Structure formats: structure tokens, C-alpha cells
Length: 255
Ligand SMILES: NC(=O)c1ccc[n+]([C@@H]2O[C@H](COP(=O)([O-])OP(=O)(O)OC[C@H]3O[C@@H](n4cnc5c(N)ncnc54)[C@H](O)[C@@H]3O)[C@@H](O)[C@H]2O)c1
Image 1 (cartoon, rainbow, N blue to C red):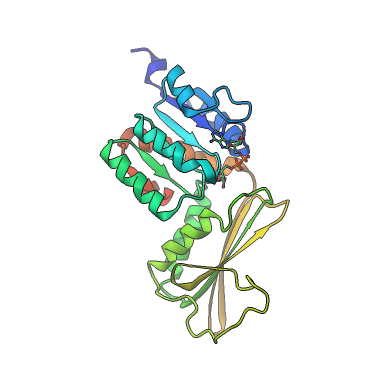
Image 2 (spheres, rainbow, N blue to C red):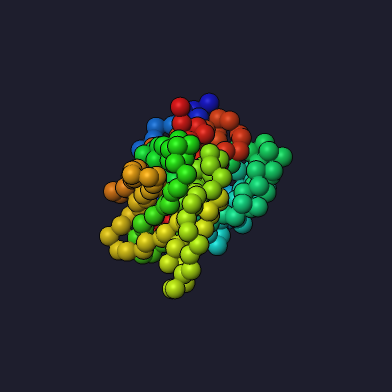
């Protein structure tokens, strides 16, 4: 077997996008990977996963497209023998369950991570840890103004992890009335309020604020550029290719 055929064959879906371009650079510089397809509905080498699959061989597809297409893309991969790493956010809980079932039934790897930055994953893990000791917390997430979904997948995942440790994050709050709709943000698991800021200049930042009488704990993470996601993306590719299992959250494979 040649050295080339030993490499993991990668397709990047959303190849023309901001994340897609960064992923292409990372895959090209990974010695154990070979880029076989760049897929994008705008100026892609291939315009659909099917078209790429009919032309080249794909072990793992990395998807950074858009919330409106990710479920269909993932279904196609898991029904057609392709392991998938999903960076695109916006999947609903029931869709994630469906993908888990399909990945297990077809013995294919599927890793979904709302955030591939190792620092951000640590922020989520620390927030989960702090939730044992604070009864009140809120999340503020700050992103560039081209982001199509709100709140961010990272904020939702952080809230989910925090909710495993505490049943109510508005403990002792007085009854309140919003005089302008949305003033208190959105409410996620166990009453965690999430506030989404969209401004040019940000890439992706998040603060988790914990309060109790006489103290505030702030856990903050900032992504300065998109390179910060790449070690996590490559780690995920190697994991799904080697393990063929279903994983939700990069923290599950960080040791
Ligand atoms: N998990 C993470 O760590 C992480 C980090 C950053 C961004 N994201 C998410 O990744 C996604 C992409 O972000 P971006 O900033 O690169 O967006 P972007 O708009 O720059 O790029 C998306 C690309 O996908 C293409 N596309 C859309 N639908 C497609 C389809 N059905 N098939 C093929 N190509 C398609 C678009 O033409 C575009 O080139 C978003 O959902 C974003 O929230 C996740």
C-alpha cells in the first residue's frame, strides 16, 4: 500500500467559507491527511457532497456550512458510508439524536462540536465545575455580525453542561417584567439566561458570569482568529476515522 493511500481522505464542505478556507490550510499541512474534495454551493470544486462522492474517495467529511443545510448533509454522509465531523451549528436536539442513532446503526463516526477551540472547551468545563458552587449564572456570547444563528451553539452547549450541575440559575430572583421584549435574553436549560451580542470586530467570545452574595466569578474566552479551531478539528477527524463512534462535544475526546 502506498503512503498516499494510508492518508485519511478528507472532503471539506463549505470550502469557500471563512472556516472552510482555514480547514483546507490545516488539512493540507497535516501529514496524515489528504484533501480530496472542496465542496461549496458557491465556487466549489464540487457543488454537492453527492457530486464529490461520485468522483473521489472520502473517508471523513468536515462540514462548516450553514444551519439550514447541516442536517441534510449529515444524513447524506451517514447514509453513504462517510464519517463526518460537524462544526456547523444550529442542529436541534432531536436532529442530534437522529444522527446518533444513524451513526451507531451504520457504524460510522460522527463528531459534533459546537466549538473546536480547546480554550473554549476548557471554559465550558470550568463553567460546569463552577455551577456546583453558584446558584446564579448568566451567559453573554459575542460574535461577528455575519453569524446566522443566535444564540451560539457554544452558549447552548455551555448552558447544557452547566444545567447538569444545578437545577435553577435564577435562584432568588424577584419576579420581573420585561418592559422591552428580549431585555433579559433567551432562557435555556434550567433558566440560564443567554445574551447574544453581534458586532463587527468580534470573532467569537463568551463570558459566563456567576454571582453569589458579595462575589462575581467571570470565566471568559476570546478567539482571536480562526486558527484556534484547527487543532480541535484535526483531533476530531483522527478520532472519528479511528473510532467510528458518535461524539457530541470536543471535551469528550480531550484528555
Ligand atoms: N464549531 C466551531 O468551532 C465553529 C467555529 C466557527 C464557526 N462555526 C460555524 O460554522 C459554520 C460556517 O461558518 P463560516 O463563518 O465559515 O460561514 P461562511 O458563511 O463564511 O461559510 C459557509 C460556506 O458554506 C457554503 N455552503 C452553505 N450551504 C452549503 C451547502 N449546502 N453545501 C455546500 N456548501 C454550502 C457557503 O457558500 C459558504 O461558502 C456556521 O454554522 C458557524 O456558526 C463553528
